[in-house]
Length: 164
Image 1 (cartoon, rainbow, N blue to C red):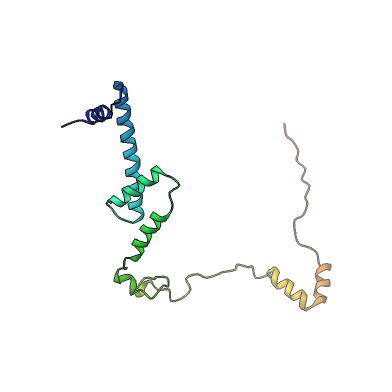
Image 2 (image 1 turned 90 degrees about the horizontal axis):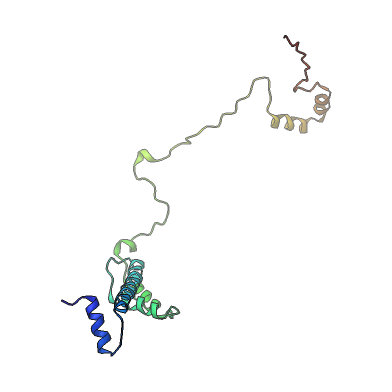
């Protein structure tokens, strides 16, 4: 069985090329890199079509794209039209309900609100919103409220003796 290096030497001699020994190894490395690039492109095309195996069409398109990166989209459109011409499975045709899917069991259904809002107020305090509503209804209360002493923080001066 011939190795890749021997095959490359035979090709160079067949075409009448004068070469150094290092050229054979460089050509082999370039060929491996080129094949890897083409196969990666073909693998990406197969993945886009959701296939696990690479076909010869994938390799041809990947090679053409590598030769001419500004490839026209005709090949890709052709592949897409072939893919779109295939019929869908029957399970997709029967689906007419596109709503959100909820659990089917009775225990997972929400039958009543699952939260409760509790506003904690002290009995002698009226919420600020209620105070404003009462003021709007009765403007005389506003004057009385302005005259009433305001509750809030008091300033206190505390003097401390320093013990030595």
